[in-house]
Every structure is written in structure tokens, then in C-alpha cells.
Length: 398
Image (cartoon, rainbow, N blue to C red; front, side):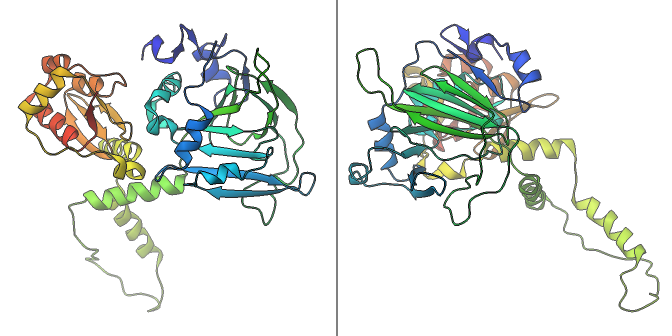
């Protein structure tokens, strides 16, 4: 990984904190406020564009409205896609619009995500952007994952607590903490950023603010979240992977059964036999885990309907088109790789391909890929992989 992969206009998005210091002292340990993390930041998306996205099918969006302000505040959530008229019906204060996976629907916002590549790609979940008028919030809550909260425009007051009562409100659309006593608070302006490790209670409220010309500013906040799958989820998926890839259809056998003490008893010997039998099916072989992990973390089922499948072309046609315009990843695809002893496993949208090492690394670059560079390193097998990825819509012409 190069230094440039997590720089913004020549400086680290962590401010004066080095990447090494951040990873050892803050990551998954304690909050960090970074003033001027992004100097002279201009939001890559406007409030109107965000609202427009929220009206589209297959875009994950929601409106959160706060009602009955005070100790008995109620929180209501509505899910998109929304009709344009819905936004003209909203009150002047106390609501928030949140849109997820912005980096996929608006590739120009990918530059924000690129600044956090000191954390591996497979850990990055999505870029969510919210808009809120004065008082807009989603209530005091916790997240089970790491998150960077970057102020894109306007101001938001963040209050946090690391020691809190975990009881949540009953009969509420959201998991809102019933009692929230903040221990620290900060006012964030455009370019400021707050990092929060998992399970820190936080409450962000949009503030009224004006720009240098005295015009009201929109409060827009970017949330860069990191995936943290539960043990239950990954063990279930791994077992499914083993079952899908297992060739052995042998059945249980007991070659030397012992007459039971009681015909209805499951004996200790039987339990021991099944422990050994299960071990045969639950392989934790390193290469098996490598294959599963790449396919699991590169899966894009949530977006596969948005991937534009190209009409099948042959390699010569692809070469001709790619020499005129560079290749790049589809914004709805996921590219990862893992080096093996003599080659690499390239993982794209939940499928694995055996490739040359340099080919896998180049294809996993987030930048446009010059075909002339690929030609220098591609094997004949890599050519087939490249053509497959293009015809599947995972690679597109820039």
C-alpha cells in the first residue's frame, strides 16, 4: 500500500496522528477527534442530489423523524424509495435523510473512501451520507462497528459516552438509548472528523450555521463504516461453503458397534465418534479458509441486479475497445485477492479465479487500468479471466 492511498490533498486524513499511532492507540480502542482532517473540503454530492438518489429504486435510503421533543421523544423511520413530494411535506426541523452505499451509486464519492485504505478493502462496508436541517438526528445509539464521521458541510454537535445504560426505548422504530448521559461533546464543521470504535454511545444533532456570505448551510455528514460480521454469521456461511464444495458423499458408519447398556442411550463412545466424524466435515484447512474468505467478503448479491452485463464479445473485440478507453471496476462490484505460493486467487463478486500475481494486483487497483499494462503481464488463463469479468459486467470501459 502506498502513502498516497490514504492522503487527501497531500496530507493524511488522520491529521497529526500517524497511521501507525492510530492503529495501535485508537482503532477499536477509543474515540479520536480530528480537526481539519480534510482541508478545504467540498462535499462531492449536493443535498438535492442526495434527495434524488433517495427517490430511486435499489438505493437504500431512509428518513428519520423526531417527534414530541423532550424526555418522551418518539422516533419514526420511513424507508425509500421516496416520492419527490415527500420532501416538500417535511417539517422545517428535526428530521434526517440517510442514503447508504453512496460510493457505488455516485462513483465520484469514491475518493472519500480511498482515504481510508490503511484499513483493508474487505473491512470497508460503505459510505453513507446524511442530510439534516436544524435539530435533525437519529437519536443516541451505538454501532457494533468502527465508523469515521466526517462533516461535509454545515455543523453537527456530537455527544458521546463510553459508559452508559444499554437499555433502549420500547415501541420505537429505532434502537435508541433510553437514557443518555454524554461524557464528551464536540462541534464539527466541514472537514472535521470523529472516529468512534464499536459500542460507543453517540448522538449527533444538526446545528444552524451560515457560510461566509451569511447563507444558511446544509448539515451533511459522511459515515464511513466497517463491516464486523458476527461469529454466528461467518460460521454459518463457512459451513455452507464447505457443503457446496465437498465432493465426499460418504455416510456415517460404525464398524464395531458395542451393545448399549440401555437401548435409548446415546453413549459417551457415540458422542466421541461423532466428534471425530464432524471434524472430517468441518475442515479448517488454510487454503479452504482462504477461498471461502475471499468469496464471502467480495460477494455483491445486494447489487448484482445493478451490474450491467455486457453482450458476450471475444478477446480481440475487448482488446480493441480497451485500447481506446481504459478498463475500470464496476462501482457495484467487489475486487479482492490473496497470494498463494505460486499464483493468486482473485475474488470478484463472490467468485474466485486463479491468476498471475501481478495481474491480480493490477486488476484490484481502484484506478483506471491501461490495457497496455495488462498485456505485459497476462497469461492466456488471465485473458480468459479478463474476458469473463468484462462480459459479466464486473469490468467496464471507462
